[in-house]
Image (cartoon, rainbow, N blue to C red; front, side, top):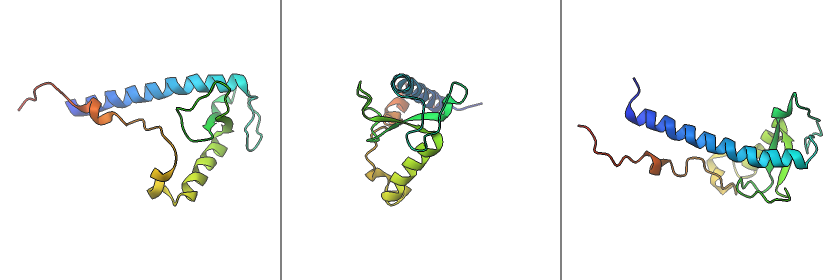
Length: 123
């Protein structure tokens, strides 16, 4: 049986994942309507059968910067997208210096606030 803390954490993580998925659908759908289904780096073409492998990359790494004209997006295949983010990590000295990357999205930013329990604890 799961503890109260564990089930509460599972709920918070699930909510964070759902919000991320909703946000991605919004700008992803807009980008897919705006741009041809071609990777901006390797020029691989996509169709409905493999479209899940085409991602939206934020050029400035700010997932909240989604202008209506799509100027902060480029469509990249999953491989080129991973490569792009790897290059950013490499240029910033690796994963230990990831704070220096200009990414602003933190899916767990309010986790501690959500985990607080105002109800009296059982002893």
